[in-house]
Length: 493
Image (tube, rainbow, N blue to C red):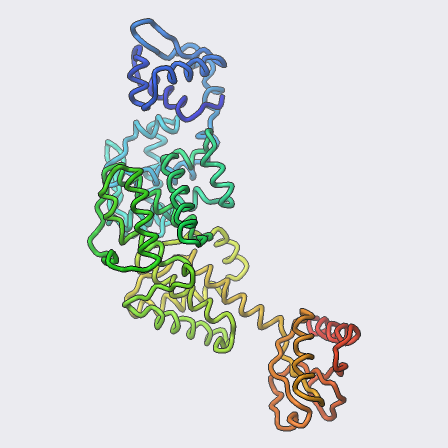
């Protein structure tokens, strides 16, 4: 039987009672009307009559009926989850409630399992925390007779939560994620956080994107959602304190501060709580460490660009590639600087293709990772997580493949500069796998260094050339293009 989340909560409440329990009290606990409770119980009983009603007393579980149909009743989304997934969810719940404890009783009822199973889950989490969180070294886990308790600095709690939530919530495209949020019957990942919070966050992000005419793409969109989910949950649990080591950006006047203020105002109106303004620096860091908005870059007092350029220089040297004249350099520098900004502020982004990147480009990933760790350790700087490093790996792999796939060609022309440029334009427009390094006259060829050339495309016959040469017409006709394509095909073999 597939019940809604509220129906399952009704069953949990009644299963925890030894006698009849008033419908009004159930309604108060779930913050709904008595009529809603009545309708839900009627729906539950339509399939299996497992709840009895007694006038002036309320409702109670019919245990004879319940036990005889228990296997079918408990076929819920909870049981479709593996033990490992259950343990990840338990860790998320424990972090959300930190520094408060969560009890065996609460979790055994939530997951329809025994106290011993939950105890085993706690022991597994404590023993294998390094496999579950990148912040394991900074999480203090205590297990006692009452339950489990996790303590750490607030930034670490939040970073761990965002890491776990991203992994559990964002398996699909964003539109699929949103449709799941709007679905009445959510899977277990969505049950651990307030559904209305997620709806409000999505609405708020849509508002600021429209208001400031920008679009926040993934992974930054999902990253911002996760951090805002955590902020709201922590505020609603009356846990709002942040360690006092963030910078005060509130006096800034740029697009990032305006977006931050808009989000703060929306969240305060939603929570009806002005204390959310304390989150200014935190949200500002999130926004400013995403992609530049409308070509506005954030300027750090600490010159992160110096460190990012040094890292790129070290990786490029190990790969024996030169980025000075490469169109990818600006993009890689920008990504690396933002990556360092996120690492500095304990902000992690989720990379859904992490495992694929490591599997496909393992040696390059390790080179990037080792180079960055070695450099950042020397300056006592936070190390970005593997998700970040995998994105940087993809950037460098793109450069490598671009260099590998394109051949360096020189255009030699006997006629004027106009014809030479026309020939260059036609080659580029043909979409050929060629990097045109230069356009020169036939008279200049004798003085030209051809050591790094793979091909010469000439409008005249050339003598004594060790570099492969293809003679083409001034207008580069279809036959000429086919000859070049055939040469390129042979270079791939």
